[in-house]
Structures are given as structure tokens and as C-alpha cells.
Amino acid sequence: MTKLSGGRLASFLKSPDPAVRAVLLFGPDQGLVRERADTIAGAIVGNLDDPFRVVVLSGASVKDEPARLRDEAAALSMTGGRRVVRVRDAMDGIAAVFAEFLADPIGESLIVVEAGELNKRSGLRRAFEEALHAAAVACYGDRPGELADLVRASLRERGVRIADDALSAFVDLLGADRLIVRSELEKLVLYAGEKKEIERKDVVACVGDSAEHSFDDIVYATCEGDMAGIDESLWKALAEGVSPVAVLRAAQRHLARVLLVKGLMQGGESYERATATLFPKPHFAFEERFRAHVHRWERERLAWSLDRVLSAELACTTEGLPQSAVCNRALIAVAQAASRRNVERGRR
Image (tube, rainbow, N blue to C red; front, top):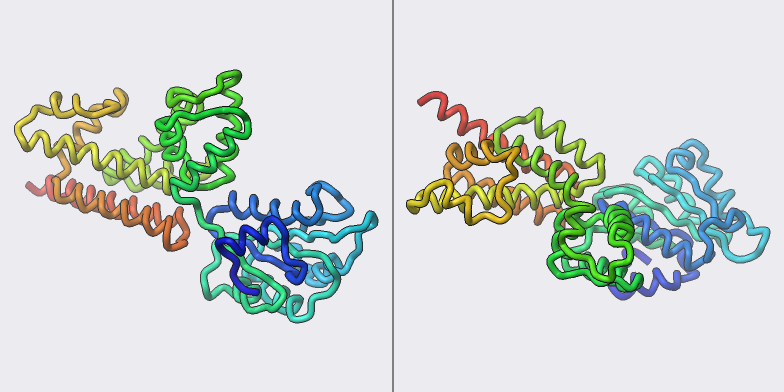
């Protein structure tokens, strides 16, 4: 076998092919990697916490003790049934170990390997894609529509409905990482309590405040050419689980709002009348800085910057590139455009 996707993947997740001795799950969406690894392992052993049928190794331990992989693969369960050997945080440094194992696999255990993003030149990825008794599964973030379906289905299982505008807000704020989405979904259900329908105000109250504040810090630093501010606020937000795609969408919203107000003012409207068309209004804590963006940025440069972050989101969702790096590069490009504008103004 090689790569699994579509209907073939769905079938494998429910009932792994006994001929497959090892499966590699990789990609930028670590929540999806873990979810699929749990599903595959659960289909074999039922209880993922069964110490007799499940063993968990780290990529580092496999690298330090290569023989342990074969030992665990060959071990028999004391209670009967096929065992699962899980290898987490795998990296290219153990590609040779797996290439050797897959050339002559022993035992009956299923090896389930979890890794981050691996490009097509990755030795670990090639080892699985080229092996006869192995499979590789790429795990990229869901498209917004797919993620919305996932959220709606998860809530339906709990007997809870979610309003369309609330669902859109939830997906926009969190991006596509399933691990983060499921965690925040649990918080949202607890917040809603006995309510049978979640409204947009529930999403904003439970999820939106901290996320929106992080977004404001990032997008305002970006549009002011504040490289240090971007570095501090972006990486703090990412460390807290904010999605790079959600950051890019926040930058898009901000640039589009500034561009709209700029266009209305060039058409003869006052700043006050132009901003009155915005919903929601700029937060009072950032109102003066928003005004400064409207006055300082030219429409052409705003349009270029908006196109730049739109392209970055597309790269994140379709090209399988490291999302945090793509997001960072896009914000820096916009910040450099802002810095050039500030320098030009200072020379006049």
C-alpha cells in the first residue's frame, strides 16, 4: 500500500487491513493526526488504555533504542488479541529504523506512527509510501465547510443545536486544528449548560474574547510595521493554540475594514460616517490606532496587503505548507509595506 485518502481511508479507519503492519499519520493538523491515530488504534484494541495491548513509544526512544521497535512489534498480549505499538513525535531521524523494519516486519502488532509535517523528500514518509505492508496518511486541516459539519455533528450527538451565525463565528475564531476545536467545543457545551441551542453571543463569551484580543494585538502591530510586536504577539497566540489560518483571517478582516473606510472617505464621507458602517465598530481601546491606519495607508498598498494575506491562507489550506511559517512571512511582508510607507511619509 502507499497513500490512503478518500473512501479508502474512511474504510481503513473503521477496519484496518490486517496486511498493513504499520501506518504513518503526518501533517500540520496535529489534532487530526491524533484523532485518526486514536481511531485506528481503537479499531484494533477497543480500549486505548489497555496496558496489555497498547504500548506508547516516542520517536526519540526509537532513535536511541532501534531494537525496541522490533521487540514491541513481536511481543504477544497476555490477554489475547492484536497489539498496537504507538510511536509519537516521529521524525526523519528514525527513517532508517522503519525502512529496515518494513523490509522484514515481524510479529502481528500494528505500528501506528504520528509525525508532524513531512515533505515529499522526507525519508520517513518515503519509507512508508514505498513499503509493501505499510500505509501513509496525510492530515491537513479541514475546509471551513467540513469543519462546520464536524462541529454541528458533534453537538447533535449531545442534543444541542448551534445557530448558523454562531457556527460561523466559532469556525472563524478557531481555524481548522481538530484538537483545538474539540477542546473549545467541550468548553462551549459546558458554558451553554442546559440550553439546547448555542447562539453567537455564547461563542463570543466563551471563545471570542481572548482570541479577539490576541488578533487585535497581532493585526495592529502588523499594520504599524512593528516587527517586535508581531514576534511577541503572534508566537504567544500560536503557543496558546490560536490557528495561523484564524490569524490570517483576522488580518484580512482588518485590512478590508480599513480599505472600506478609506474608500468611503475618498468618496466624500467623513471618517465618522464611514466608520458608522462598520459592524462591529473598532474596539474603543484601538479606535485611535484604527483611525491612524485609515489615514496613513494608501488604497493600493492596502489592496496589495489584503491580497498577500489571502494568498497565504490559500497556501495554508491547499499546499500543505507549515502554517505558522506561512502566516509569519505574510504578516512580515505587510509590516514591511507599512514600514516603507512610514519612511516615505517621514521624508516628505
